[in-house]
Length: 607
View 1 (cartoon, rainbow, N blue to C red):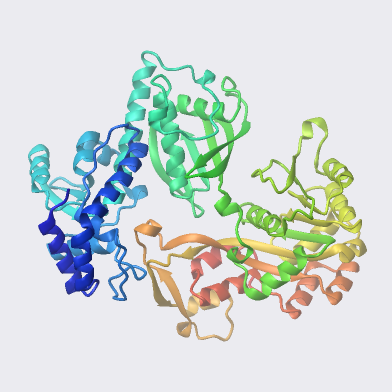
View 2 (spheres, rainbow, N blue to C red):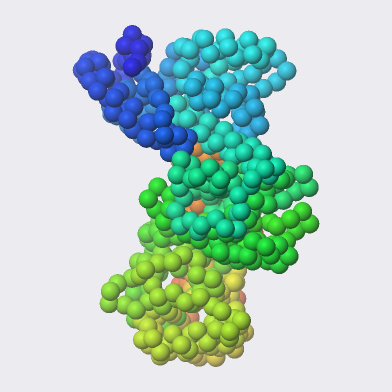
């Protein structure tokens, strides 16, 4: 099942590094065979899912056997105190004089990976090409002892082969996704010349299925969509862009706010993929001249995910954007949104009130929807009737009574509020205030004993007050119902796996508005870039939260219709942190960078 002599050699390497002790070595040698059998059963099931094959073979490696014991270690070589596959592979590479590479699928050349070796060859030997020039081909593998495969590649490629070590688990996933997608594209292209299935008549899917569960006629295009969606879910993408070009189409994913190109589709196959997704979304596949919107729900790793689909006609065909509503992202604990303790306590005071108005403000993409849904989940209770009015419903949640806007039949925000008030609500969430009637209806709902939470588009919290007044709300009414305002932005978080110390320059300190501070003494963190963050130095996002509670003195100012600058001065006197100040505080805590703060807060002056 595995090479026992090689296993002993690996254990001795770990022993010499202090990662394991003699007792643990004996434990592996005594129980290794049993562990290998368990690993093989698990991996076969995983391979069947990834490759879409009923019969698969799997050879358990010595590294997998040792890693499965999950030994704890306090040495610097350990990963979060554990002897993992990554730790063992990296040390083995060092011992063998090879480079260890952590592969980021988003950085790989799809054509190089899929055309250098055939799918069966890569699957059998677990090897892929990652770099190539005129003289040399760099191949990533998890079994550097397999000299035979290196000789075959050398003979086939007629150039120098440079092996590097990488994680076996990553290789399996990359090979399955890349070659699986390539097979789908080839089969779909072939079918265009023969019997391409009638995409308009394919059944509605509510759950992504494995390739082996599809019948032969529907496989190619459906399988291609399956790969694209799974790839996006794996990388926690917020949006999927499928864009037609002159000679091909591109697939891009937005991850942590940045777009990455992941695939290029043949021009012939692109319309079929668009039609397949439109079918799932219950859109008219025959209509390509006007924009359309749709949605569908699927599941990924036992978790339901909603997808909202939008198409628009362009010069080269229909462009499609799929917004991914992952409950793990939209429904978070309030403490995970980016609040500091003081601001979190203030916000919890707002949302625990039985009546009043809460405004959440910021531009598109600033995380307002996540804040709203996380808030509603936080306060949801069998004792409360929570009603939402949305355009459209972002994500269906059983704890809320959600109503979509239908302007074509006169059911706009203002009309919806009037009808919701007859439904005995305790909490009303209004997707957005964008006209005078909605603004006044929201205030009236708050005045009549309901907690109303809604959003606006303003740069900061004080501006939300003047915006509501501009929309026709009487200042004295606003001051009597407004509990508080939150302005927010999203910034990327420094990757914890490659974070390192740095110092802010005086120029940067000046640009941030840190007055009277010697910038060279301000220690910060930056991300060097690693495979876990795709070389960006960032992983995940966090919020900058400008929280403005309605104090008695602030209420008096609002009641008189004071301009936003006066409201801002009073809020600052009450201890409000501006978005810029909030970012500087996160900078000092090593959560984000100067560049992210400047980018998120450059639309207003330094306070």
